[in-house]
Amino acid sequence: MQAYQIHSGQKIAGLERVQCESTVLAAYEVRVRVHAVSLNYRDLMIADGSYRSTGDGPVIPASDGAGEVIETGAAVTRFRIGDRVVASFFPGWINGAPTPQNTSGALGAVANGMLADEVVLHENAWAGMPAHLNYAEAATLPCAGVTAWNALFVEGGLRAGDSVLLLGTGGVSIWALQLAKAAGLRTIITSSSDEKLERARTLGASATINYSSTPEWQDEVMRLTAGRGVDLVLEVGGKGTLSRSIRSTAMGGTIAIIGGVSGFGGELDPFALIGGAKRLSGIFVGSRSMLEDLNRFLEVTALKPVVDRVFPFQQAREAYSYLEQAGHFGKVVIEVAR
Image (cartoon, rainbow, N blue to C red; front, side, top):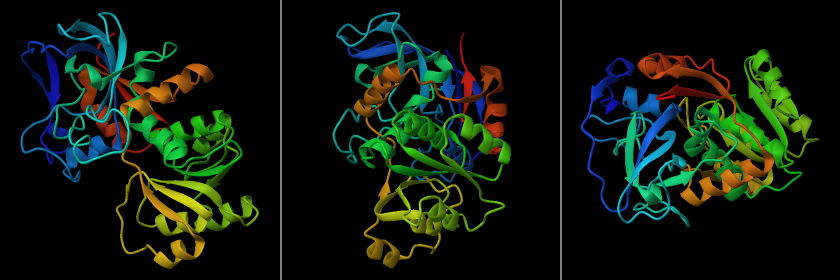
């Protein structure tokens, strides 16, 4: 089988295409022909060595992929040959609360991931694809889609009429914008690009803020919400944004920490949390049951994710570089097989 491997810290140039031996299936394993893989900022962190949990040797990267079942083990009951499936980010986290045990095998970091033409995982690690999505669209579900779902509706507990602030126009933020719109939430989104903000409005953003021309964007959030603030912020920035996110949040609201693109410093003011009865909540993607809940929501709403660009398998490095340049709107996908 064909796959890519990378050593953590070897940068994008260290991504190498290799030939691997196909494994014999165990009783409960499923072999999938991968059709598409979606990249996340995490994949760049693994490449540059800044991700906190990686192995010592080379790993097949990328957590998110979609494909077709081509072989099943003798005891498999959940899937049949021909089924269209997506991999769950944490193969061992089926439902319930996260634990060190069920989140220890995340794909594409310590364990081999999806950037290969075939992947073998336990049947419990797979979920069915929504019927209306193609493989490129479905490949965006396991990390960005589930993270947005978890932040908004599981950890965030938002309901129709609530408000959410989305930082930037990357994969998680655009997924959250689409889900929020479909669920009847009021959405405010930020970007340094007026063109991207216009695209966000076409997807249903209630209001937009250019943080380059409005550097004190937390004040604009308060103005847009009549001084109340939003019920939830999806915090993806980190340094320079966290304190503003806290100030943008309504009393009793939540700041969902999705990531820290710029890192974190000493900008946290605990008294701003205490006095506003606000809470910080770390979002560590989600379980397979959250992925399945998301899939059902998509089928009912017929919602399709935004795919910015699709690269062929032989241009995996170019896909990584394109993501690193941060000019994308939505998700960057690698097509593995047609």
